[in-house]
Image (cartoon, rainbow, N blue to C red):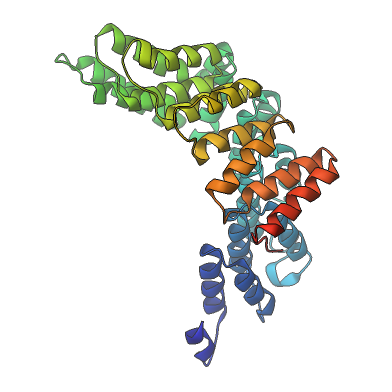
Length: 374
């Protein structure tokens, strides 16, 4: 920081640059120290700090700082600078709602906003779709003055995910032509795909499966996998990652299990860690947490952070406090410098009012010298 110290005049841009740099490197104590010493702050300063906290898994500090700054005129107040604060709100409940998995707290922040933009609404709708609460999702969607393509596609994906294809079709039929661009691109790709009369290789089939799956059309993605089989095209490891992810988003637990088993039985492909992570996600989303843990324990190789993260995320979504310590401890070993598993474990026990276990999580973090900046 010597160059910054030598500057004869430091404007707000130079202060914000230093704060952002420290936050991105995980040096939150230094970032927060500069933030507190700034002669003048703006929304960029606040966003840099919030982003830094969220990247390091510290949602509580991000919210605490945000609430504190709402009462300080330096970063604008709710009445005079509501538009500026929209970006800070968006950063906060993207991280809190999705990273911490707490849709209730995310909605509480959303309701505090004096004004919101399309991104704000889409983020909340996506959160509700993630926890399969389509009643809240559709209520928020109908309140949007101008839903965009993402809004429509998220709703279609959500209804498809819970098996309500008639409602997904109703939403699709209501879309205006300008919002059919993404869907139209898929249909155009489908037309071109069908017009190719020579042999279609696995890459071509994967592209179509990925296209449908990434836009929420899980049934169409799986239909293309079945067509791929009918055409005697050997699927690849990537094919099954796409298929399992489609099953996860559509809530197709049995089909996900069947496709996972078919890798070895029918195609001679040994599942890799990515496939195990997808299957853990599939069964975990549907409260089959014992099965998810048995699956992890039976893996022929060491589970990675994605596998344990899928289990921990499922525990958080379903408020299950029987298994999160197993996943959190594994993540602590795999990512020893990250405070995220400690903070998440503490929050889960605190939400369940199991204060002894919450205290244990906090003390373990201190013993391991993992820093949680406040």
